[in-house]
Length: 73
Image (cartoon, rainbow, N blue to C red; front, top):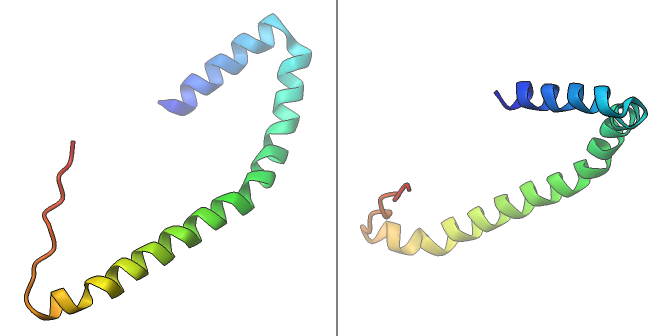
């Protein structure tokens, strides 16, 4: 559904200002490439914090504490 909305918005941009639409089409892969290192850093930090959480909670888990039930909104 999100892809369809993006496609429709791009088609609307094509009708209103086609040079800007072509520029967006060309620059989108470059923006994606620039954002890759930031995504990798985010994944790495998330993994490190999950590991630290598991490491700090290990003594409690060994003593029989149960993990808290997830509360979804």
